[in-house]
Image 1 (tube, rainbow, N blue to C red):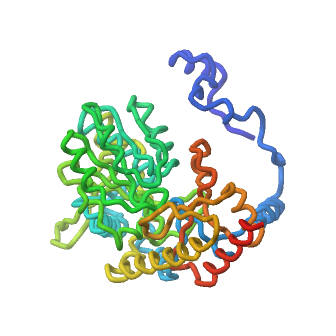
Image 2 (image 1 turned 30 degrees about the horizontal axis):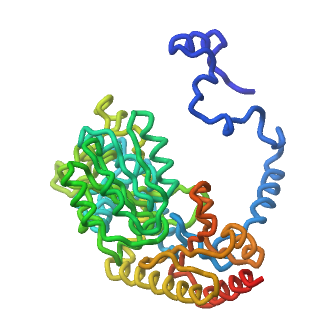
Image 3 (image 1 turned 120 degrees about the vertical axis):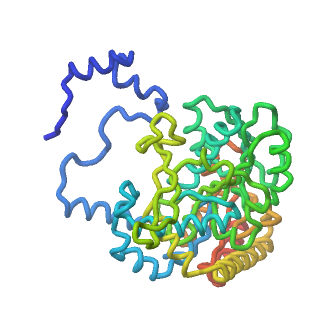
Length: 448
């Protein structure tokens, strides 16, 4: 029996108050093609055991990342997560509320958030980082909104190398408040093209490095051009491990960094949850979304932690809140912090170097296959190749041979005209035997 507290008359009165004729009017922004007229094609009633069996049978049809050679990336990467992470994450000190609404009784949570912020600031090369956001894509959206507040301008220019899902997520968030976005056409190596698009109404330019095609770019000159025009530079990073080897966004002049931290401490999950990293220059801190944890001393002089800055509308800011979707991803944040602590700076650099070496070995093996064109000239652990056939069809064929060869770019941007482009990623989990198998099978498929 469903409990519906509102009567039909209540609903009619509420709709009249906001000027809507029906509940459907509240969903006019949802494309008709995405709406469902009836119920989902599932049994209306089933027991728990029956549901478990049905879902288990469905799940068994999938090939998990750990069961076959795996070369998929495109924003979600397969890294080894030490068993220590899972062990420590369950300690009682951390079994407090996921977000510290009562900071005085959430010292375990606040301490690791403080340490997390320090790690992210060091990783990104920025002076200040917040206590995380939902994920990398919404962090990018928050960065664009923040830039419009800081500059009092209303346009974001987005490079053609930014992950298409990040672009779509950002457009979804910012269009509701009237922010204009100009996303450049997909390009393997053209981050600097944003410079020509900077105008007097540009609040920020958004670039990604390594970009969705794997291209690593020194964005220093882009930062200089943006800042000379009074705009901010937002640097997006989807592979956090890359910052262990490449020049940090802060070193290259970034004003805001929006990144995805899944690669550190968090295993692959279909759809997440993941953890958004967000950092900025110190002068912008008052416009930063989310929370900032600080260190202090209590009445007895003992070390303690507090919420130094909390700008949500649920707290004291109300209508002046910098964001209303800045919930921190507490559990994923903790996993990130534990793994980073285990690695340390030396361990992270070694991990990053191993990732690059595996990717270079994969690139070399694929470059030797007739018909394969390497598109990405400088990369970290991911690169793009052009095939003489439809990339999605090739991936499907290889999947039939129990190898997941990568992500067709057409899956990310169906209308980009890059149906022959395949994104290939390799990490420390990639075996030399996996690379040889991929090259051998891809060569056979293309020669058939």
